[in-house]
Length: 115
Image (cartoon, rainbow, N blue to C red):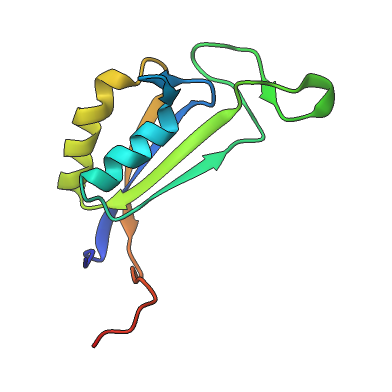
């Protein structure tokens, strides 16, 4: 797969405890991204944060260990593919934030040598 230099970054912010069909929502999103042929996805677990649903700060500190830490899913691809993907997952995300921004793709390679 080749990505154009002018790609886009879709960033989805959800909570660690968010679910879809009985499994973690972030897992479901990554699986759907792969099935729909997106270039790749990365899930990041936040150490601390708050959002629209709760003004309580969720943190990884031992004295205030949270069970709902922030999760960020980052996906880079073309604008068209990300818009289509976002429309597909939109109604599955009941609480969260999604941002879409331009990203300059410097390289996208598998590490395997070409024949």
